[in-house]
Image (cartoon, rainbow, N blue to C red; front, side, top):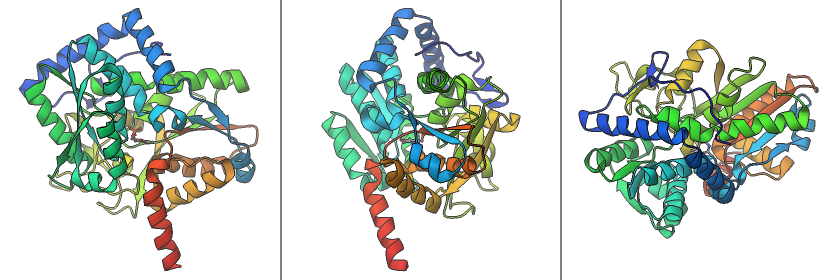
Length: 402
Ligand SMILES: *Cc1c(COP(=O)(O)O)cnc(C)c1O
């Protein structure tokens, strides 16, 4: 499953990526890059990672034909890659297992992570528990308030949740605090970054640990349909689930790829989190990519109904794919995502994560305009149990307004 895809060697994807960090982190990142490259070339490491993906994450995940949704859309056949059925409920576990194994390989005993909704925090705490690592998760106090259940889960798993009270008290601020911790602890601590963002080698490494999604999809599609899908749709926050499903088929020119960002309440700055669609090139968290910023280069506040997409930056490889035209990026609003949650729940018996619902909404739009013999594949990145309180609140407000 961790079969090789070509690796860039420079840490750059065109003009994007790189390593914009203080001197103290340069040598740690260089060491991480060496260890990671050596690990990927080491058959026993790859075999151990594959075993973890099977036995802990529960892979391979199912390739599911959404029959009733297909019928309702009246166009292309709709398939879903069921990352929602992984242990801990999303694709995040693939990456945290890989990085936890790398932590052991480097002889480190402590891991730290940032988290927004708590999904990456839970996946990190889970991997830390499996391997007996000390674990500290940075989380904004605003997110701690909104995601009480995930805070409890992390603590139950033996992690310590460190409250972050700076800035908007959400994901970006948690990321800053985790970086700060790492600068003082890098000797014995590994920072498990949760998406294809940050300084090199994180974007490349996280994509590599997530590309089991696309490798499996490729094989499953060939087995089920004898060909690759015409379109693949994935939601984009930092971009890890999208990079994971896109990258193994990026050279298959017949496969069209669509990334869906959070369109939020409106396309005014501060009302959405669509870094690729509405942002400009800049540096955030150690890498150059598209960033939502004001005319002074200050990172802008962001909004999305889904905490996992609520981030003002995006992985540098997506910036590269956007500029080259290989992937088309678009947005889906809060309301459309919410409608997609309700629709998928009723037609297929699947309650998707609000993040994944962004991909579902766009896919339904596209499918309706395609022919019945065509195939569209949605990366269903996670399940929606975590969002049920939020969804209930919004549906209640909608009813009151009606
Ligand atoms: C975290 C999360 C995302 C967004 O992160 P990416 O790195 O863009 O994949 C999307 N879906 C789910 C279910 C998540 O938990």
